[in-house]
Length: 118
Ligand SMILES: [Zn+2]
Image (tube, rainbow, N blue to C red; front, top):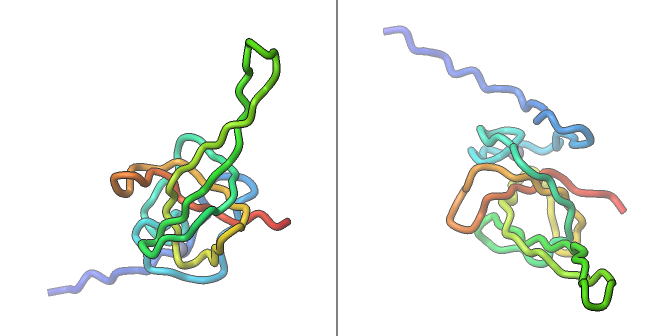
């Protein structure tokens, strides 16, 4: 019986300009660079508020909402949980880019794509 040789797929770009492939490797299935996760939908930039042990980063960013009564903009925050892979070395207070993907778990439908250098 001929054993089908599993060729290890090289890390590929994800089709989003400005996102570089990380140098480190990982074996996460839910990695956009080394796994099978596809990025589609919206892309945001935010600050990592906390890192959870279950490969999760809580990312927060500010959006502006127009307030008709005072005719001014007020700042509101959006907070989401994003999947964090091992190939990206993400720490607290980093500025990261996150992309929308399929739901990975109950509360995770974003994945961290990269770090923004200050
Ligand atoms: Zn990876």
